Length: 283
Image: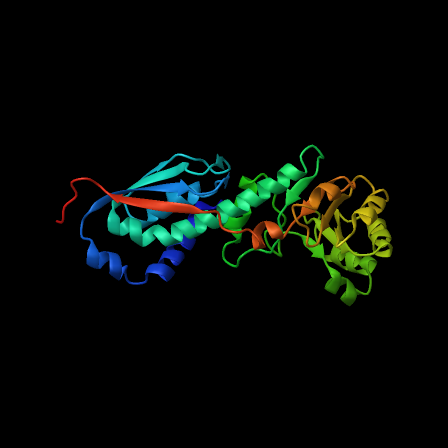
C-alpha cells in the first residue's frame, strides 16, 4: 500500500467529516485524556492496521497507538484489536473515519478468506475486479490481499481486457485481439472475454495471455477448458458467489474473479470503546 497516498486520502476523509472542527466534543471536553480500545464484535479477518497507524499519526502527535492484531490475522468476538490514548477530543473527532474504513476493509478481507478456503487444494486462486468503491480502490484491493486473494488489474492502464462492447465494435474476437496487438508492447498483458464456444475458438487462435469465461456454466467451463492450451491462463467470472466457486474450481480454470468480494461485503462489526483516564481534570 502506498503510505503517502493513504495519508492524502485520510486527510481528505477527515476534512469531509470534521470540516472546521467537532463542535460537539469541543463544547463538552477541554483537555481530558482518554484511552480507547478497538474491539471486535464478530469473527473475521482484520484489515486496518495501516489505517489506524496512519490516521492517528496524521491526526494528532499526542495520540499513542498500540496495535495488537496485524492485517490478515483472524479476530474473534471480544478480541482487542488496538489501543489508543490521548486527548479525548482527538479520539472522538477521528473515530468515525477510522472505524468506517476498518469495518469495511475487514469485511472485504473476511469475505475473501471465505472464498479462498472454498477453493483450497485446487490450485485455483481468487481475484478481485474493478468493482470497487470510487476513491477506495487501493484500500479495498489491499484488503483482498489480506484475505489471501490476488488483485486483478488496478486500472484501465494496467492491462488490456477486451469485453463484449469492444468485440462488437471490432467485429469479432479475432479482429479485436489483432487491433490490440498492433498498438501494445511486449510488457502489456492481453485478456479477452468470451461468452460462446465460437468466440473461444477464435481467441485460442490469436493466443492472448488470458481468456476469461464470462457467465459460463460449470458444464461448459469443464468442456471449454480442455480446448485451451496450457500456456494461456483461464479466468472465470460473472456474478459468482462463495457458495458456487468450489464447483467452478474443479473445471480446469486457473483464476476465479469475483466482484462480490468488494461490492457485496457487509461491514464487520468493530467498535471503539472510549474511557476517560482516572484523575483527568479540566485544565
